[in-house]
Image (tube, rainbow, N blue to C red; front, side, top):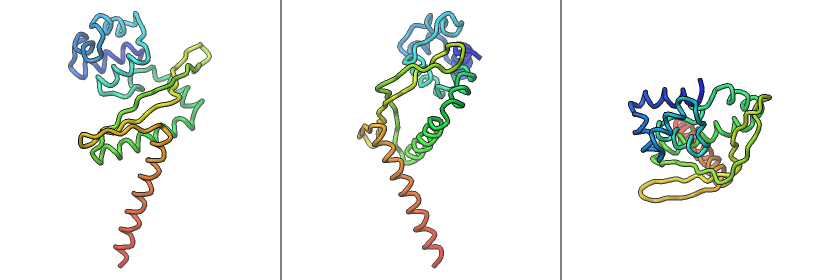
Length: 165
């Protein structure tokens, strides 16, 4: 399915009109209609806003064949993304609200037909909890993830020792 068809599908699943989705994203209902009909392609920033407004992952809006090709060409990036998503779910289970803001992008060709995708180079991870906010660089967030894994493993082995007594 095309980006426009995916936007339309998820918009209807949410019970939103084109005008309502436009208001959530900060664009007109006419712009939403043009995206859905394939008359225009949303910019990366707008597509991210649409995915957030619809409560879906960006992958749910983009043509699947583009992602499959990217996955084949960049398996290490896919692994890092999956690890990051797992860490975010863990933090959310602890009561954190997690958001990411890309600070630097580059365009990369993803197939032989000249399709390109904007690939994030640098981002910041923003954590919110109890009225407090903390912003982490990508490297700091990766360090936080490894600390979370160590804490989990520590609790696990502590429990193992307790249960062996």
